[in-house]
Structures are given as structure tokens and as C-alpha cells.
Length: 81
Image (cartoon, rainbow, N blue to C red; front, side):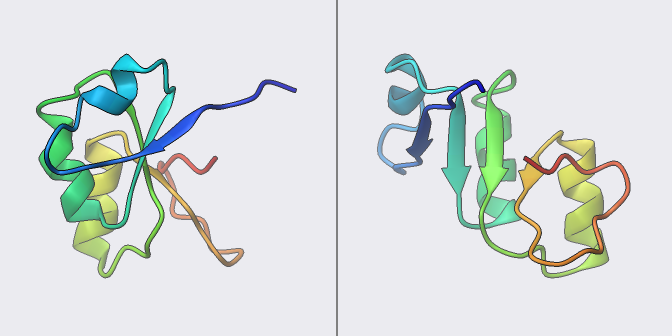
């Protein structure tokens, strides 16, 4: 089993956790991850909080974000770790 190093985002220096060899950057919301996507286009971004609408689900899918899902209804096309 491969271990994943995870870091939480800090608004003052979003690239610092990835420079420390983290493989995933965890954020609370889809809008937070979308704001980081432009700065970190190749990073794996994991959204820990719920997507609040179908629009956010579509944005997460389009931005290649990973979502934490707490039920059996996994949105099609969205990465779930």
C-alpha cells in the first residue's frame, strides 16, 4: 500500500507544502481548491468539505479535484480517494 503525504493549505504560502514533498494538498471547500488550481495546476487537490451544489460538483470535475464523499452517491467523473 502506497502512503500519501498530505498537507493543508495555508493562504500565506500555498506552494510551500508541495515543496516539502507532499503529494496532496487538502482544502476545506471547492472554491478554495479552485483558487489554488491556477497556482498549482499539477497538484492533487483534495476537498474535505461537502460540495454545496451541482455547480460546485461540475467545477470540481472540470478542475480535476478529488472530493471526500460521505455516502454511497459518488458523483460521476469526480475523483474520490
